[in-house]
Every structure is written in structure tokens, then in C-alpha cells.
Image (cartoon, rainbow, N blue to C red):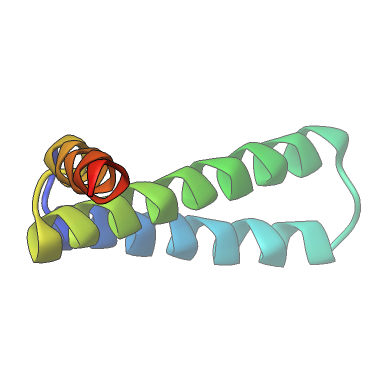
Length: 80
């Protein structure tokens, strides 16, 4: 998994590209530019999801280990 900083750099690059695309779209509607804008928005959304996951893993550890611990604790509580 990439670091949050690496992901953030890519988000900033795509955001700058999106701003340029908005500028071009403001001059007149173009179907290809609109499609490119939609794809860019989806990429940015995916990167933000990846960024949140990377930050969570950095802060709390591996997601799978956390889930295993929680399930084990839940089993212990039910057994008690």
C-alpha cells in the first residue's frame, strides 16, 4: 500500500488537471471533455478512498488484524 503522502501528491496532480479541464469546459461543452471530467472525478474519489484506508492503517494497523481481534473479543463476550 502506498503512503498517504504519495496518494496525496497524485490527488493534487489530478486536481490541477481537473481545474484545467473545467477551464476548457467553461469555453463550451464538449462531449469528450465531459467524459474525461467524469473519469477524472472517479479517479479522484478512488484515490481519496485509498488515502483514507492508508491513513487508517498507518494509525491503527492492518484492517484484517483489527477485524480478527474484534471477532475474537466478541466470541469471548458471548461465551462469558
